Image (cartoon, rainbow, N blue to C red; front, side, top):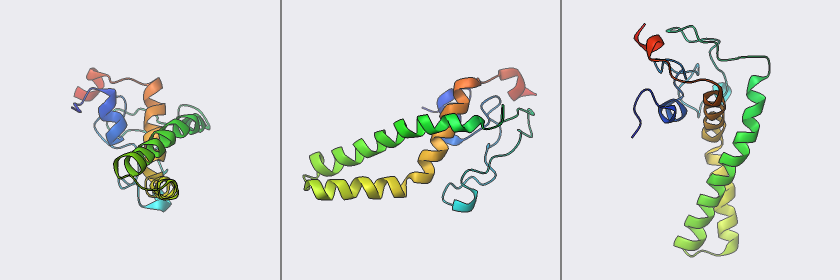
Length: 127
């Protein structure tokens, strides 16, 4: 269950990690590819800066690798083990999954990365 005040809520919704009152992203839809990584400078509710330092989100590339592997393994398990397809079809399903879910993987990785360094503050949320 995703309740405000939890890191899971902030990670899956892209909400401000401090107050959970607004999205960190300029466009909520990750499939607007020109804006997929465009992030607001700060939260309009609590004034939390999202870029803690220059190139802060480069670290999310490491998280992205792990999240991508999780999606690829899920695609393989579903296609090869559950649907009992051939290895070639399983490989194709992995490639298609990585392309289709690429924008979501990028955003999830950024959300996980920033939530490693920031936590929910009830006082800022009530402000």
